[in-house]
Length: 134
Ligand SMILES: [Zn+2]
Image (cartoon, rainbow, N blue to C red; front, side, top):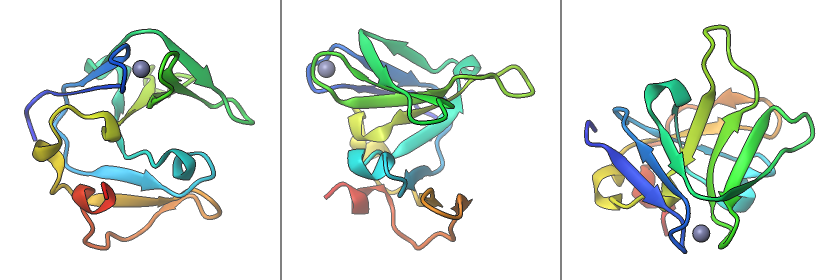
């Protein structure tokens, strides 16, 4: 997937642009991701992922990440790390539920992350993005 992807919240205030080649998406079953039903596309801010619009954010317990949502309509848009990694990069993930071009990514595989107990990637189970949309 080399085409630049974009997304916006329900009211249109917050937008993201994702310029990276996307080969899979991540679904996590942690107490926060499962409540939002988010489907994440990862990258680093330094890769050129762009965000615009007025957001509010939530930091859970250890404040490792900022979970950012539209201040107006409440859509979960992205989350990003509060700390740079060892390479000086900020990890970010945009929520593919907001995508403007769903047909472009619907057949990409889902990577399931077990975020409740073991914090590990689970084997792929042949589900793809379109299987989670409905
Ligand atoms: Zn909005």
